[in-house]
Amino acid sequence: MDNTALELLKNLLAIPTPSGWEADGLHLLARYVKPYAKQLAIDMHGNLRVAVNPQAKVRVMIDGHCDEIGFMVQYIDEKGFLFLTALGGVTTQQLAGERIILQGRTGPVNGVFGVTPPHLLKGEEAKKIAPQELTDIAVDIGAASKEEAEKLVELGSPAVIDAGWRPLAGDRVACRGFDDRIGAFIVMEAVRRLKGRPLKVALHAVASVQEELGLVGATTVAYDIQPHAGIAVDVGFASDCPKHEKKLVGDVALGKGPIVVCGPTYHPAMQNLLFDTAKAKKINVQRQVRARGAGTNAWPMRMSRSGAAVGLISIPLRYMHSPVEVLSLQDVEQSIELLVATLLAIPANADFQRPQP
Image 1 (cartoon, rainbow, N blue to C red):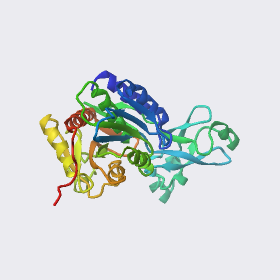
Image 2 (image 1 turned 120 degrees about the horizontal axis):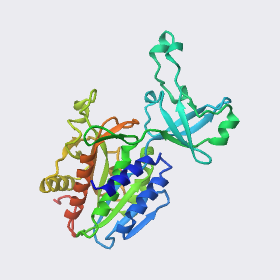
Image 3 (image 1 turned 180 degrees about the vertical axis):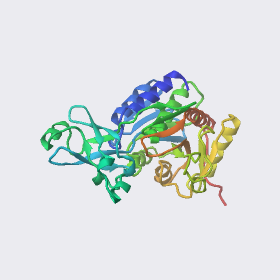
Image 4 (image 1 turned 45 degrees about the vertical axis):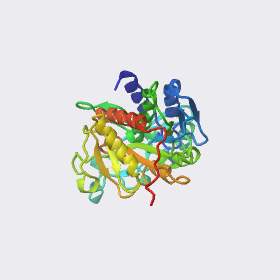
């Protein structure tokens, strides 16, 4: 990955983009990709939509969602402590002792999920230090009263865990919100790398919103674009760390290439194209099986109007939906290469119809 792309990725991951508040991240991506786009717009829901070669007959949609899991302020008590509700799949037990950053009335507001000192825990309480419900744990922003807190934040203020980019050994990186800002980055970086290349289809690249709340953004975009084919780019479970069950998610490891997901949701022609392209370009890929496919934006692409031939590229990820998601930058680079090569391999007269009797 070149320095230009890597700098974009770091900057994107530094911006809080909880579901419903993705705009700052999407505007960063828009500025980056604008020189390479024929058409570019932010739509009614907030999705970033980019078109390349839009006059071509065959429409192909690629999507990575830009939202991350997060929180909103739901209640402020008389002492100025905040209680939150989740935006997406938050694991409450992970929150004790974490720092948090809220979007306040006039700018960022820092806070912490406070914990009871071990000295004060007794009996069964000491065994259950991890909170079980969000209502069990308060956020302390330092306010001395409800009135003081309300000068800084309001009901509905969004928030994310304050955990940023941390390089690990080799090419591994830990960060909050790789799910799925890494997919949005890959989709837009693919647009940049297609500049001047012989693309034969109409490419509609989307960095979508509110996937974590029910595939919201991609649903309306797919309805509007009416793609003949689509590729979603998301993250997938890596099973190469303790307590990750291979019998549940397959044998998937960091550093062994992107995942091509297989199952009834994914069109055989698109699956074959992804595998054949990877083989031709000598890109290592891994195979992961999903019996159901309603958990990513491949689903709304497939189900919109009369349907589309969809595929899913996943980036192997450890510790999904935690503040310390871990991936391999080599897998990211190979995912970009696979996406670009696959798009270039689709012919101008591509026909994804099933064989007829």
